[in-house]
Structure formats: structure tokens, C-alpha cells
Image (cartoon, rainbow, N blue to C red; front, side, top):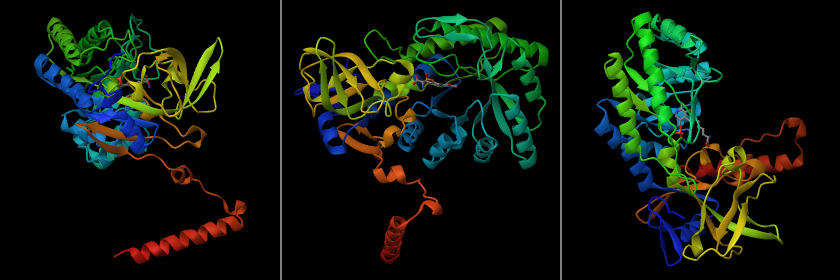
Length: 459
Ligand code: LLP
């Protein structure tokens, strides 16, 4: 078991960011998302340093879909990264945190007119246009308001990356972006160039996620430069920017070997230089959009062990107080995780158990066949590498409040997302008049009393 980031073991307890995980669980309750600030920052820095050394003009754009909260926005800003948002809600979160709009890249395959307008009003850095409908909307909005939109076009390069391999199919069967193969990307470029207040800076592609092999990225660079050449010859357009998306893999379990962002930067920069030189292009501004590789291994989820069900000769199920609603990746993608028993971190494993969640579904499993020391109710289980696509994809299935999140660094722990309460769960519920009865009158009277005492307390 390889501990991540700042994790250490002291006196049989797991420590993260200098904080005793058992103490964190006691103080903040479980399930609890714990984020190792130093690890997150060092990943962000590795990207910045790697590209600073390897390439003259670049932007590292953190993909907020992996994990976005107001505090994360602050850290991302401090580290000098740009931010990729994919919805009005993510944009709102960034603006709420005071993240500079001119460092935001706005993505999405079906941005609504309201979302596009919001992005324009706040003056985001780039809008990555995914389809002709968006292009038309942007044209109409910018003409009406006099604003300008600076865009990239998202292209489907036909390079499909899997964790350990890739295929180059030229296929265009994707809901994202303009296909190269069918001439759609070329046509979209032609149309974008004709728009008065929409400025086309370059192109974007994203080939997949949790990728370890860098060859598909190099293949994508080649394909994109091939397209650069096509639009230069056909339309006289020389793209200034190339955004290669996200996708670098992280270590979830033994056998996964995470790629150093510095190495990634070197390889990518070399591929871009090679192609630019080969085809006689000035070096474009190079953008990448890492999400998982920045926050993934910085996250740990702490759970409390509850019931232990032994099926003799078959399997031992250990149930924890969270599961598929705080980490849907196992049920959705058959993702694998490792875990440490935080209060028995130095004890050797003596049994194999399967960790189940508490949600009403057989598929609600977190880990199959985990080696652990003897377990009993009350133990704290720390599931590793849960920083990406856990909280951001969490739900309230079974009306269970979503966990809190704490940021740990140098022995201090700060809540960056409060634990939801039962009151939060019913906050948006409404009972139509025709279903109301005496109980609601009593509740309404209580609300009025609270409101008036609030008014009295106001200075
Ligand atoms: N840029 C674009 C346009 C993307 O679509 C994505 C991820 C990223 C950047 C960031 O990719 P990353 O560096 O995090 O791999 N929910 C799935 C992952 C979905 C990724 C979607 N796009 C999971 O939990 O594995």
C-alpha cells in the first residue's frame, strides 16, 4: 500500500496533512472528504513548472468538473492556473469565489443561451464552441450587445485513448465537438471566421480520461496540426492556440503508475514543437486541462465501519456509513480503490473483506477484496484517491446528506464544504395548498415566530 501526498503513519494512526485522520473523523464526523492541500498544490505546480521549462507560451487550465468549490477556486487561482467550467453552476461557483473571469474557459456540448450570455457578460477568457447552434447564438448575442467573444472550436480528432492503449479511428461518433473526418470542423471554421464579433483563436480537443500512455496525446497533436494545415491552405487561417484537453491518469490501485505532469509537459511540448516545425507554423499557445491528475490523489474519504456480515466460506461484507452517493465511480465505471484502516494503519492485514456502502442497492460497493487487519464497528476506513469525480458527482440518494469536506495542511483542518443537514434535504420541498392541513399551519406559525424574532435581533 503506497500512501499518497503528505500521508504518514504515526502510532498506528493515519495522518494526512499533519492531521490524525481518526481525530478528523471524530471532530467532523463521517463520511468525510479530506483534501491534502500540499499535494493538490504540488500537482498544480508540477504542471506549471513542467510547461515553463518545456514551452514558451502555455496555460494550464484546471478542469473544475473533477472537483470545484469556492476554496478550490482560491487555490487554483493562487497557483496561477486557469479554470475550465462546463455549466452556469460551475461558472457561478468560480465568480462567487472571486475567480477572475478572464482566466475562465467555458466548455460544454450544449450550453444554453442563458449560460452563453452569462459567460459573455462576465467576459470569460475563451468559450469552447461545440456546435453550430452555439456559434449562431454567439453571433446574435455579440451583435446585439456589442461585446466580443473569443472562442476555440472543439474538434473530434478521432483518437480514442484507453487506459493502456489507443486507437485512431477517424471516427466521428461522439456527442462532443466537430468531426474532422466528415469536414464538419472545416465548415465550422469557415463560418466562425466570417463572424464579425466572434474571434476564433484556435482549436481544442480532448481524447479521454485516466490515460497513462502518452502516445495518444502525440497522435492527437499530429491530427490537430494536420487540421491546422488544412485550414491554412483552404481558408488562410493560422491558428494561434491549441488546447489538448485533460486526461492524465492517476494511481488508484497497485499497478497504476501515475505520470509525472513534468514528464507529460515535456513530451507534449516536444510533440507540438515537432509538428509546428514540420509544417512551418509559429508555436501556438498550448493549453491543457487537467482535472483528475490535480485533485484525484489529494482526496481521501473517511468512513466509519458499521455492520460486518460474514457469509462463511464465501465473503465478508463490511458496511460503512457512505457509499455510492458520495462515490458513484465504482457503480458507474467499475472503478477500483485502495483503503487503509486509519486507526490500525500499522497493523498487518489478516483478512480479506469487501467494503459495502449503506445505500439500498446491491451495486453499492466501494471495494471488492480488500486486505485489512481485524475490523470492528467504529473503525475508521480511509479510501484513497477520491479527490476527483467523487464530491462533484455526489447525490442525495436515499435522502442521505452529502458529506463535509475539510482541507488539511500543516496539522490544521478547515471545513471547505459543510456537511448537509436534514433541513438542507427538505429546503427545496414544497407542499401544494391542496395537500396542506393542520400540521402545516403549525409549521407556518413556527416560521413566522422565527422570522419575527430574527427581525427583533437585527441591529
Ligand atoms: N477537458 C475536457 C474537455 C473534458 O471533457 C475533461 C473530462 C477534462 C478536461 C478533464 O479530464 P481529466 O484530466 O480529469 O481526465 N466522471 C469520469 C470522468 C469524466 C471526464 C470527463 N471529461 C470519471 O469519474 O472517471
